[in-house]
Image 1 (cartoon, rainbow, N blue to C red):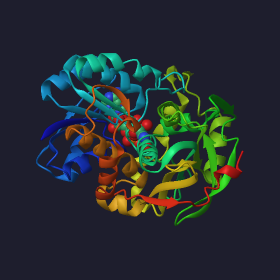
Image 2 (cartoon, helix red, strand yellow):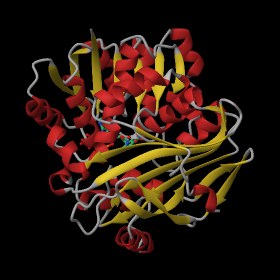
Image 3 (tube, helix red, strand yellow):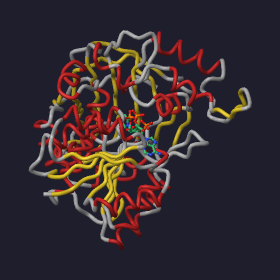
Length: 402
Ligand code: NDP
């Protein structure tokens, strides 16, 4: 029996609130707080559970967060606001003795750069305070790390080649839209690519390397090598890995729009002056693009995200392994009013919170998900709407690229 505060009332926050409300035996009190309280109220009303209350907070402000935590005295905060707020929320957690979970690592607003060092710097303080912080507990990062930990525990003596493959084969019927916060999404995709090879990081141009990969129940989709944050912790936590890469699918129409957005300067994150007002072009673009939360209604098709791993099995023989989940946009919408990208992020965030609150992932310090026992989390994925499947000894395709 525990009390959680969810911060952020976007697509992911909506799913987290729904899923916590579906598990009242673990989450007996839920507070949904965000910058715009009316959004929290609308979500709480749609869920209609008596144990959800709402509040407002500017999560850029530590004093406001401290006040919020003192008012509600939660056991855990589920941070599904934006990556810019990670450190202020962690600071407030330390001040008030609250445990912490998020789905994306810290990014400074003025630099499209993400790495764990800023949050890992809190390790000692969380440990000394006896508090647990669980980092990156969405799908990727999140389930991608749990899948890798599960593969290491049950199938491999040494994982050598890890490829995380993320396909969205859905169609929302819009000319251009992003599936989660457009500012965060476009910053991520327009960066250089990066992958890990033999102890070093190799940098590529943005979306320079791509190849068609086959996804279960979907078929072949052009998949692009991106840098993704979980690679940083996975190669440290599984040091037998020789190469680690991340792939995401994009359609040609999406890429054409993205190229134009960049070419005309709308992806800029520095301030420009317009009619005497300072604006950040990418933030302005977010205001005119479709809201990712409104895509769900007409979204067809499914996502497929998984890990393709090659290495040595428990007996030391060569072994190929693929573990994945497919999630239907329509089913996700029916259950929560949100599309599958928000769903596949929000469900694991709730499960991570459940793992902590039921004592299975309770370890003072700051941890990435793969540092915990994957088994109880994997069991819940099957129960909470994200069932997973394994392919043993199949063709991983990825060894033919690069
Ligand atoms: P949205 O933009 O839809 O929602 C973000 C929410 O945070 C909004 O309600 C917003 O409030 C609120 N917010 C923003 N700034 C503040 C602030 N200073 N104080 C309080 N609330 C604030 O984003 P998503 O729901 O799509 O994404 C949420 C998080 O999930 C992001 O960090 C994203 O990177 C992460 N994510 C992780 C994935 C994974 O697999 N690990 C995949 C997809 C997303 P307002 O409405 O007032 O603007």
